[in-house]
Picture 1: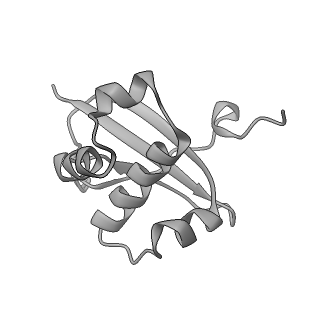
Picture 2: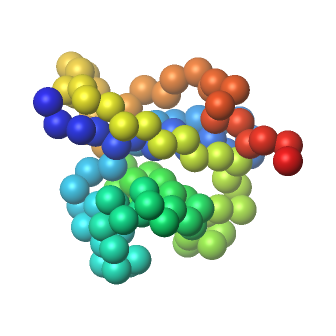
Picture 3: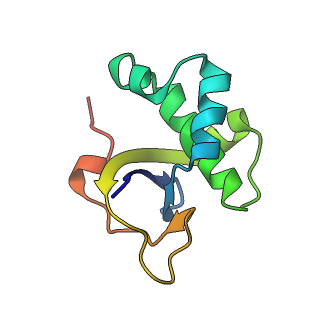
Length: 109
């Protein structure tokens, strides 16, 4: 089974959608930030997570605003690593969203 990186995007209006990070988005990330996803885990910047979510959303066929405008409507992005095959009827880019968990909500610090 392949490791599937998934990002759940929550917008300010409460809508939530989960996307798989496909190889095309991983390569685009490496070209944009001049580092691999493994390096991102060590020196993670919020911008990198948001950029991955923006690119995955765009590559899912959704019309998105330019990155700096897109993040103005963003509440949260939750990153999930899963070892799972894609299920029947599931697009390789967009997966069904899961309910919000308290861990995915921003802290009040």
